[in-house]
Image (cartoon, rainbow, N blue to C red; front, top):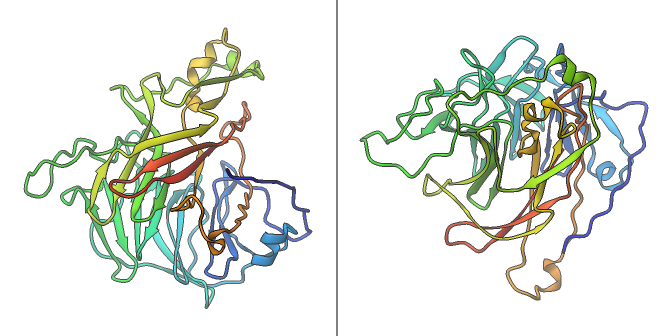
Amino acid sequence: GVKATTRAAPSPATQPCKRQYHTCVSTSHGDVLLFGGRTNPSKALDDMWILSKNAAAQGDGKWAPVEYQGTPPSPRWRHSAVRYKDKMIVFGGRDSSKCLGDLFEFDIKSLTWSQVEYRGPAPSPRHSHSATCHSGVMHVFGGYLAGGDSYNPRDRTLYSFDIQTRKWRTYPEDADNSGDEDVKSGRRGAALPPLPPPIASHTATMLGSHMIVIGVCFSVPSHVWIPPTPRDRERPSPCLLRIPWRTETRGMRNVIMAFDTDARRWYVPRITKMSGDTHVSLTGVDTADRALEAFPSRLLMQHTTAKIPTPARPNPPQRSAHSARLVSIGGGGNCYFFGPHFNEQLVLDVALGEESASELVVSMA
């Protein structure tokens, strides 16, 4: 099993301000780079901080602002950031008025920002999407799109950006970036494996060459969430409800899909084992309250995922044993009126095609 301990790091005088919807990536030396986020819906951030490897390991919270040069991204939150070698790639996000679709690169060695010029069919402006990196290719999926109905995800296209050649490609290959969720076939009209539903505020995690996507999809034509009434907002309740992992509510359901980056195809991974808490926590209200139906947070949204290695043999050699430390930085509730609850971790053993099972940890705030 996995044993973990937590402790609060002291708050030094110099540190990032409180924020949420920022990004963090680890460098090749184990340092942590933090960028962007927001303090409130009208205050986006564009500052950048570094947490040294030793500080992260010791939990002493020693931060330093990054004095960068070049052309940085505008202030934003709900963007994505991935690292490839000594480059950090930032895409999309939003500010207080609009979705963003620009692409920036940060050179970790020279501490220089630059806007990326690219070729190919790039994703349209969006936020709350996911981005992963494998073998020098960044994969962007989902999110909320600008224009039209900007509150519901509607893009089923996977966008892959080759960091070396600066070229985008899509899957399916004949897809555009308009958010068409009715793509059914490839360039020559050949049948494709089932595409994942349009989702946002999900996570994507690389397990080998397989990208595991966990989130929530819509399955009703209206795609509408009903907001709480003013009366409902006046009486928050501490009630915490639990419902099964495989659930559907108000036409929405949890979904797990995988994309094989080598074979370029989607498939549904097989869950070989589930351990830990098999329920998802709901930030809720009293069951008699009319606002209960307004909250889709009983579903897997705004969660995080992490992978942990699974030994190939029951008794691995001593050199295979290791320990790791996860640092959680910032964050907060998605709603000002109802604070989130944390659920217990859920560990899934996922069978990836013909490969052996790998463990994936899901946590929700």
